[in-house]
Length: 271
Image 1 (cartoon, rainbow, N blue to C red):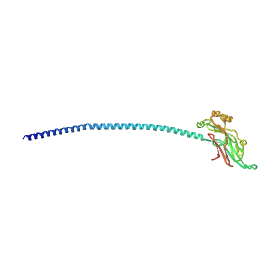
Image 2 (image 1 turned 90 degrees about the vertical axis):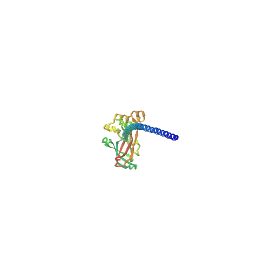
Image 3 (image 1 turned 30 degrees about the vertical axis):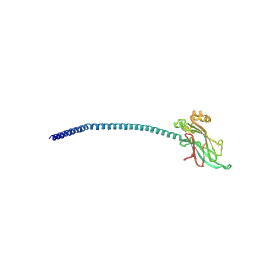
Image 4 (image 1 turned 45 degrees about the vertical axis):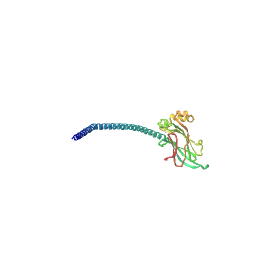
């Protein structure tokens, strides 16, 4: 009997221990579940707040990048507008520098061989014109020159480009003064003297009258041509004689043009 009672007590003790252990485990599980139930929303909230802060930071960065790009676009647009104005000014400048003015025409009246020399002689009718190609006056002078290659000698004063670019009243284009006309078989001094009439477009605008400024240049031309300081004071970059020429054919009319920068062009009318 004693052994049975001892066995029963042992079993009861073991059962109590197991029960207490189970109760402790259950309490632990309940506590953990309660802790998780309480803290899970807090953790999710903290995570969401962290994500929100990250999104705000990214948004701020994007806004800053957008602001920087907007500023850069505004700067580039300003530069583009400035360059467009510069290109427009350069195009206008180039047009002014390349602008040519009609100054004279020569019509070949006749060409015959000289019976004595056997050389061709050319009779030309020479007259000065305005920019529209109309004669400045009614005088049409005829000259018989030796050969069919005809030279027209002029004095030319070329001004600094800055005066041409800004359409200076007196110096917006080169000016020239006719000297003489001669053929290929003649020395220049054997040629025919042309009237000393200013033929720059500024003269045409004044009704064919030379300005005091032009008269000053022609009156002292060779001194100016040899005196850089005197030339610079007048805005002249070069002063010299020039003699454009071409071989002429009977019945044709040739036109002499002067570019604003001082270069001559001699070509058949209608070229």
